[in-house]
Image (cartoon, rainbow, N blue to C red):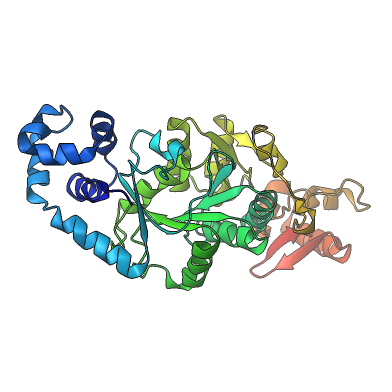
Length: 369
């Protein structure tokens, strides 16, 4: 924490947490203390603020910032402001970097380490879960920093996979670090704080709200060299992170999914729009030869089931077999895809299961093995 940190906290409390105006002021006033001490006349002369902003600054006593600092000291939360040499340069370079980062843990050396943001749906399918484990675990195993948002689904699965292999992971929260949000993940967050960092732009007890998660997404992408979207629906919040990544000149990667699954509509659309398709962790790291990566992920990678080419079954069974995917598919979807009578499809599914090629799941669902 620097001597001027209190004034950056004051700015964020008054102007808001995702405003680009804090960065603009920091570029004009290398010592933000001078801006504060200049008073209303100086604030007007800055050319950055409107009347509403100036009224907000006047109405926000700097004592509020001291209260935040005291609370952080009480909770063991460190504070990194825009003028701090520890503030990540790649995050500072985005249009609207946070004036302040609140943190439990430690920031890695982003200049020396490759960082990949991984995001996706909260309602991960079996395919999405396996893919998250494989890709996040493999990347972390070779030294890639995994960044995500700590939500249920793809976020938590990616954090956990990184932790399982002894990797480093950062969790960017959409609320204050001390706020009791999603307590089922409290143990995971504590482990992340020990092996990486919990990060938020919000003061310790700040609650989540309608806009905090979309605002948080720009930090995930801003800290990342590239963003990987594993599963996302057509209106998923993960697509906001992908859009932020493009605006911040970051790479966007996506995992193609089942074309009949609503949880793959967003990722498939990203690929059609130019996102880099990913089938293996090397598809990502090959884009970053400037980073030296070490380790062998083979001992933690589990294969994602794919279609075999040398199966000895009936022609109808071949049709049905190729309509089944690694993600469980309902029999109605299979029947519609192969255009065979349902009684024939049922008979063929039994044949394929006896051959050990597919597995029946609850709810008349089938998947590859």
